[in-house]
Image 1 (cartoon, rainbow, N blue to C red):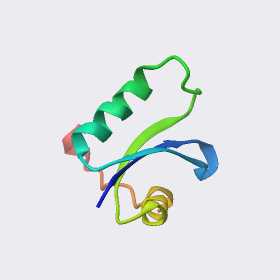
Image 2: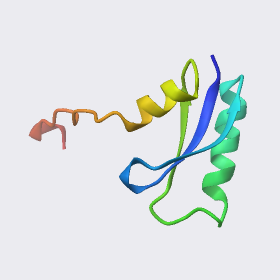
Image 3: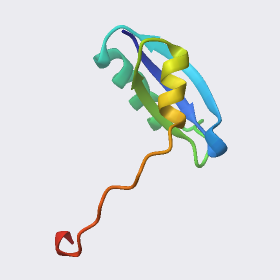
Length: 74
């Protein structure tokens, strides 16, 4: 399964940047995008491991429950 690199904007707007066979390449690409000056404010760069681009986009737009917070953990 490939690793997909996406730009994630507000309101779950996604822009697929590229796909790689190894995590190392995908991670390097994501880090280069994050370091670049052309990244829009509020835009996140995410790496997603999925069977295909459709599955990656479903995972990126999935609403997840917040992690439980325990006051003693602060």
